Amino acid sequence: MNLLKQLIKDKFSLIALIILVLIYTALLFADFIAPYTKDFSDRELSYVPPSPIFTITSDGKLSRPYTYNYKREFDPNLMETTYKLDRSHKYYIKFLSKGMPYKAFGIIPMKRHLITVENEGRLYLLGGDINGRDVFSRLLFGGRISMTIGFLALFVLFPIGLLYGGISGYFGGKVDILMMRFAEAVMSIPSFYLLIILAAILPPNMTSIQRFILIVIILALIGWAGFARVVRGMVLSIKTQEFVESAKAIGLSDIKIILKHILPQTTSYVIVAMTLSVPGYILSESGLSFLGLGIQQPDASWGNMLKEAQEYTNILYRPWLLTPGFLIFVAVLSFNLIGDTIRDILDPKSKVR
Image (cartoon, rainbow, N blue to C red; front, side, top):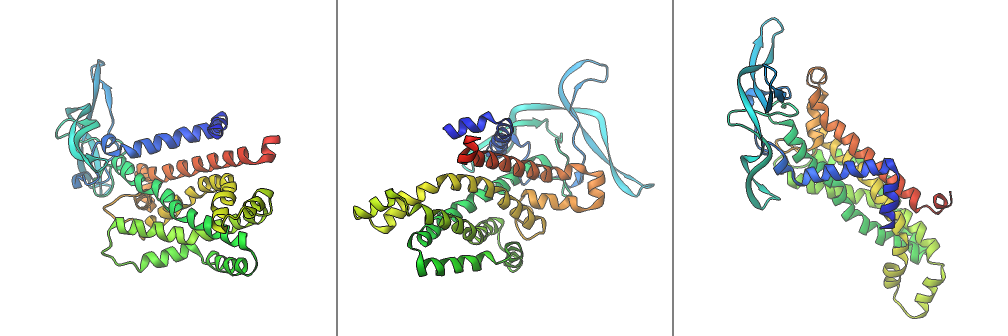
């Protein structure tokens, strides 16, 4: 609680914390907030621009929010498809109204959405992709994968690293040498290239959920060694302290001493390491999906959504496709700001300063 209070006092970490809370809240209620379900597409609206929302009528009167559908046309001079607003019919925006059916949290059948549009109307708040899918809705569903993969990897990685580093540092000698040489061998593996190789040889018929789980496991099995090495260094200094000697004197087993007396002393480092590690896993998943080796279409992640924006023409004429990259940047920056602030708070030298 004291850590949270000090974290809030720093204006940059407070802003970062608010941003992350908003992102995760939106992702949690994605089905409700998104105008469309993750499977919705309208092929006639490929790369449709964002839908403008109007509150003033053509004669200058105030109106409840409405939009127009886009009309698809082909420009023979430019040899390209263009979209123009069809102003012949208004489609009013509806809030907390019934729309496409979905299951909240994957369990509760519901139809109400935060924002929808009248029947036959199309509402693309951030434009559409090549398959006519709503980018805004896909950002919410894709963010669930991109923003949770780091925490799931840490859930596997940190227990392994803590226990491995704790045992190595506590026993020392030949046990320490053997365990650390193995950890260093794991650390020497070029992780990103290994991920690319492993992802490339995966069976093509694997579902995105299976790929997601496998990526989490691979990231965890690669990342534990560096963490274990730092924990081992901390344990080497902690095990010489008086409370550890007292625990030995009363006959506690080695494993109890490690788990109950030594590893809890590394809590400060663990908190900082967890906060600073999440951005790396977000970038790893996004990079793999961007290369087509991670989460596969039609399932969304911010990485495979950003893949569409790699084309020069899309960057120039369809900038809304860059939105996943902006969200990745914001999320990674927010985690780093919070991690740096926590490190300063928990560092004794920073407290004195």
